[in-house]
Structures are given as C-alpha cells and as structure tokens.
Image (cartoon, rainbow, N blue to C red):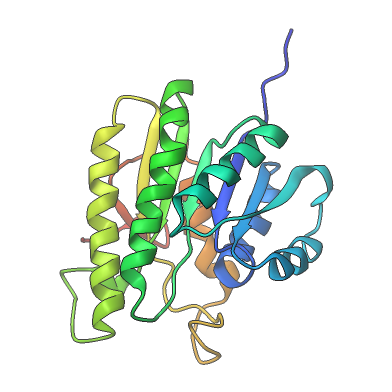
Length: 221
C-alpha cells in the first residue's frame, strides 16, 4: 500500500522572526517546510538554525512582488517535494510599501492555491494584525493598517472562492511580537505569536474557513 505524502508548507518571509518561528514549529510537527525569502544569505542562516531541517526543509528565493520569482519558486518546490499543501503568507514590513506586500500575498496565493484545490486539500494562512481590524482601527500606521484590512478582505474572498474544494483560508493576528519589526518592548515571544498561525496551518478537514483568529479564538473583522 502506498504511503501518503507528507504535507508541505511554504512560509514567506521565513528568514527571521515570526516566519522563522512558524517554520520551526511546522517542522516540529513533522511537515516538510519551505523557507521563502528575498535574501539568500539570511535564508541560509535561518535554515541552519533549525533542528531537524535535513531532508524535511529547503530554502527558496522568492520576491513576493515579482510574479516570475514566485513561479520559479513553485517549480523548485515541485522538484523537491512535489507541491505545496500549506501556504503561510507572512512577508510584511511596517513601511509604506505594504500595498506591494498585499499584492504579493494575492499573487503567491494565485500561483499556489489552484493546485491545492485540484488535490482536494489546502490550508492558507494570511498573517494579519489587530491593526487591520475595522472594529478597532485608529490612526496607527495608516499604510500598514489599511494593507492588513485589505488582506483581511482578501482572506474572505479567497475562502469563498475555494469553499468547497478542501482549501481552508483564514487570517491570524499574532499580536505584538518581539521581532525586528515589533521591537524588543513587545510583550509576546515569536513562539507565542506563531502558535495560532501553526494551528490554522494544520486545521482538520472540518476546520473553519474565512475567519480571523487571535490566540486560536475568532475575533471581529
């Protein structure tokens, strides 16, 4: 009897911080993991910081704002692991370029989601923020907040698009995390921040879709 293929997760922005911790936790769960990012040296350092990397992980250069870079990464992953079952759209910056990062999440999903639907299994996690909640939105980091609100809208649209295909799509608010972007004063560790992301990335088939979560609990859009 044939052995089922291990699920493969691709994490964008995985060379540091929340993305790297997400990759670490997914590896610990026995998944194959692809660390994607723009900096080859940073990716190499991240890869070698992981336990159990070996045959279970690979790095791939991906600029989420460049469609050809995304397609090239897809071909590389297919050659190694056969495809992607789980996509974590984590790449983000607290700058004015967030509209590019949003379009990147859309383009990455456009490339990888159809194959998930074809196989009948997929998990897509869009790493959002409480700053993107319309219910609580203020004047904090306007470009960042608006891009995360748009990412939340995209989450709902993508979930509806694939609602009967076995692909579950959700958004995660990791909270204020001690990363290069969050700074040393943030109250949450990367491990705490990544927990809900990993939970959503490994949901059972009857799990939720089209929802927004913080600490594994649904929150208002």
